[in-house]
Length: 391
Ligand SMILES: [Zn+2]
Ligand SMILES: [Zn+2]
Image (cartoon, rainbow, N blue to C red):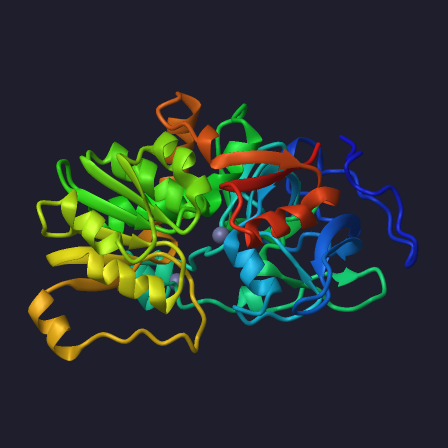
């Protein structure tokens, strides 16, 4: 098997493409490979597609050829400084691809279609052993540089993956096998937006039939929450955003109503919930102001689930009497409170038999070279998910 998607030769350092291990065996990995990847050289710096050098997969590692990668708001937050990041940084953490090479002792087979997992669980720490792998304490991987730029600078990878690239080399526990033949631009979303959105509804909030839901912020995750709420049997599903342009997307994703986030919002929500407020509000932005808005839209005794990842210094202020009197619950949903190894295959099977349709989440596909425009559109709040496809 050859890899025409990889650059044929290194411009320096004399590395060459190594052929894949035949038939998925456990042959020792060989040389590093050169691939093209979307790299940020610093906070606010212009994004560029660069040639980068990936190490050969070591023991327990695999190289995955990327087929499609979504551009997630967390990628944008790394670039614009909302989240702390180290540079140079390969962007991307929501992707699907095919195992192209396995390191010694790998249980995986070359040719297996996979989804990448940005929070691979160690299965040994206190949280993993109690069945909360999304809180795994082994978080060293994302901070260790892997590979290097063409000019020899160690590379950092977004959430340990760096998936907006022609290939990644990752621990095998960071890949989840899926059935062959899924549309790549939809399968890619299983690894972040969809798992997060579905998990927030099913695992964290546990929405039940007949309940009312409000979703604040209609990016890829917010839209995934809407459709999961519909599938969970919620009967009042209020989609809320600052952009009127999100109305049609929201209704297509499963909302029963679209509301603009303005000073009439609380009134509009109460008009649709017999003056009580919703049973569940999902905050999918990651800002103190929208967390407070979600709090105010929720009924006494209801629950606010924070799905958005916000900035360290953005403080949420709530009244002490309000906290007591409202009897609301405020909690976060990290990676959908999910076990990706168990839940991604279930979602992939649903996608395969059309029980799950993610078409509405994909606003468009583009090449890796066009990926910087996806970041610009995301920053302007345009569309749902922009997905980079590679073949
Ligand atoms: Zn993400
Ligand atoms: Zn763990």
